[in-house]
Length: 376
Ligand SMILES: Cc1ncc(COP(=O)(O)O)c(C=O)c1O
Image (cartoon, protein in one colour):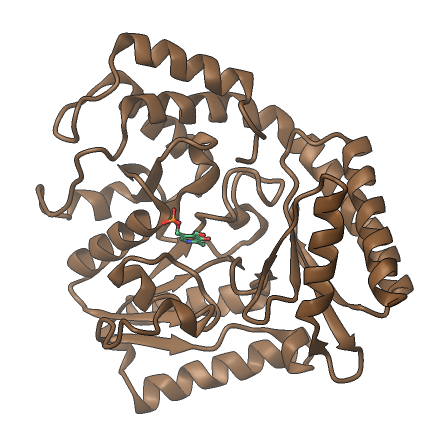
C-alpha cells in the first residue's frame, strides 16, 4: 500500500464504482478495465503496450510466463536464486528465496533452471566480481544443463525483494538483455514488489537502461484491492491465441477504479518519494558508521534493505538483532518486517505519503533500538 492506509482518492474511487457495478467477468469489456490498461501503458516501459489483469502477484507472474512460453514456443525458464515470485505451484517453482516455500511440494515444475543472482555483500565480493561470477555460472548452465535455444525467458526481479532487497546491478541486467537478444529469449521483470512508486519511480525498470519484454505487477497497483496485471508488446499479446488464459475476478471493476485512482495520485508523490529516499539513505549511511550491527545498506528509492550482522568481518547474519529491534519498534508503535533467508535484513519500506518528520521519527526509533540491542 504505497499510498498508505485508506488513501482518500482510492477510497472515493472505490465507493463510486461500487455504486455503479461491482462485477462483470473477464469476458466483458467495461470502462474501468479499459482505462486501467491504457493508463498502465502510459507509465510502464516502452515495449509494454497491452495488459491482462488478475488477482494476485503469483497469478500475474504465472500469466506472464504462460504468455511468453506460448508465444516464443519454448518451455524452458531461467530464474534467479533468492527470487520470490509467489506460492502457487508454478510461481513457487520459480521461488528460491527460502527453501521453506518449496519444502513438501517437490517435485516442482520441470524445465526451470536456477541461476545465481548477484549478492555481493553476502559473498564478500565487489559488485563487479559478483556480476562476473553470475554470468560465468549462467554460461556454464547454458553449456552443461540446457541450451539457450530451449529457454523462453529470463524471469527476474529488478530488485530482489523477499530474498533480501538486492537491486540487480545495471551491468547484470544489461548482460542478460544482450544474451536474451542473442538467443531469442524474452526478459520478464517481476515488478510486483518493486513497482508503483516503491523505488521512487513508477517502476524499478525506470532506473535501468535494460528494459523488459514482459512485466508482472501487483501489490501497490490498487493500494490494497486485490488486483495484479501482466503486460507485453501488442505483437506478443496478439500472438497469444484467444482463450489461452483468463480468470473470473481478474480486473474487477472496483479494483480497476482503485488502480486508476492510484495512477492519478502517485505521479505527484514521486518527487516527495525521492526526497524521502535521499534522506533515508543519508541517515542509514550515518547509522552504519555508528552501529557495529549494520553490515550493509542497499536498495533503490524507498525499497531499502539493511543487513544486520553479529560480526562485520565474517558478515555473520544476526536474526536476533532484527527480532530485538522489531519488538522494540512495536513497543513504540512502529512496525518493521524482515526479508532475506536468514531473517536479518530490515525491509525498510515507508509509504510515499510518509512525511519527512515521520521518517525521522522512525529512524530515531530504529537508531535507539539498535543501541539498545548493542548494549545488551
Ligand atoms: C516480487 C514478487 N512477486 C510475486 C509475489 C507474489 O504476490 P502475491 O502474494 O500477491 O501472490 C510477491 C509477493 O510478495 C513478490 O514480492
